[in-house]
Image (cartoon, rainbow over all chains, first blue to last red):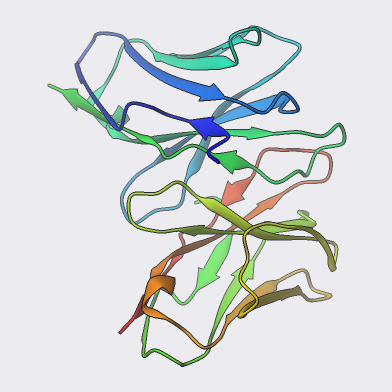
Length: 114
Length: 112
């Protein structure tokens, strides 16, 4: 049972435009959500996160939106740059005190077209 | 560089064999997690240790075991290897009270 789903395996976006990556979850106990970026032959790199008490978190070109009622989150990258080409994983955790395991989606491969 | 180190980077072995993967967490991080990524799949949680104690278990096979040592490094032992165990194995660590995990570069295991 896939509790975190990324339904788009791939996405191509023109350089300078907005990239929108989507993620859905089914477990109501999830209360913290993270996005990771992964280049080939490297480990995932933490990008941005959001707690369930917020509906938006912004960090430079990256913004994550959370819609709890729809159990949906999205990552917006504006403007998209060639270095953003990578696989993006959505992850979720539950628990109050931190240090919880993460449940990952299967990833979306983002390609930025120059 | 996340500060998490993993060795070896690549491992090729035969079916039925046993291997040990090693992970050193970031300085100050007490929690270590192991994940498996098979081809075109997401990362599957295997097991977590916190300050030397097992804290959570995921889809870890009985042929697999792990431990965290007093210096906080961790080892993942995989035995009676099968072709289907070929995958990337990632270790991650997180500081106390945080859900943000920092990943090592991974060990690519190939079972032939």
